[in-house]
Amino acid sequence: MNLSTQLLHILGSGASAYISARNMRDLQTRPNTLAALQMAESGSVPFLEALGARAAAEGDAWLAERLARHATDERRHGQIFAHALKQLNKQLIDFKSIPQTTTDGTPDERRRSPFFEAYFSDYSSEELKPENIDWTVFFASTYILELDASKDFVRMANALPETEPASVNLKKGILSVAQDETGHAAYLREALERQLSPAVVDEAIDLWRTRKVNALIAMVGGFLQKGGKMPDLTQEGMLDRAEATPELVGVGG
Image 1 (cartoon, rainbow, N blue to C red):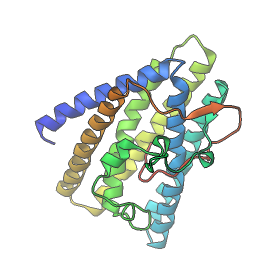
Image 2 (cartoon, rainbow, N blue to C red):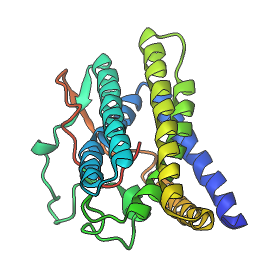
Image 3 (cartoon, helix red, strand yellow):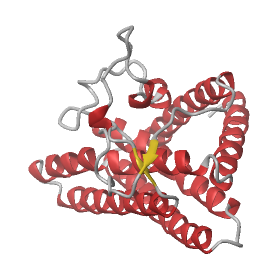
């Protein structure tokens, strides 16, 4: 990774960390932040399960077992964030009730992920399906996401006040998520090292680090242009929607 990318990584990660920590601490923005995290974590489960089935069919029991464990972890993470929303008398919106597109024919903003659109730019949706995605692309791209998420979750947890019982419990839950993400990053790195030479592993990681930097800067820029506002992802109620989330391709979290 060249010097300019390293500097942009530091700047972009710092801005993202500040925004996510601030939004988690503020009770006004915490519900939407929790909903976005629930959507990302639960939304990756079908993708990971399909990848696990593919690995098993290809005879890679080591990878199949780790993908199955990864999917189980992500499902639990989604439940942690769904439970935290319940404590605030909120729940993730029911995406089945939201139109696929707006009146002008563009996808509803709540169904889009500008970050992932930028992160996986130049890849078609067909190429990113679990039955088609190149294993190196999956390992390297998800390794970066999981590694960074493990640090981001710690920052968010530490931003929570210690004066509220609900916040204390949420902090414990988020720290457990961070620990899981560290484990996911470790097996994904090992998966790369099992199939590629050390030099090629480094090249793949540098490529996806650069993509992450570019996607993060684009996301933060869009966030600031909107005045720091996120699309509303919550609604009142106490129903459990831990699994009622749109499937997000390639999401680690």
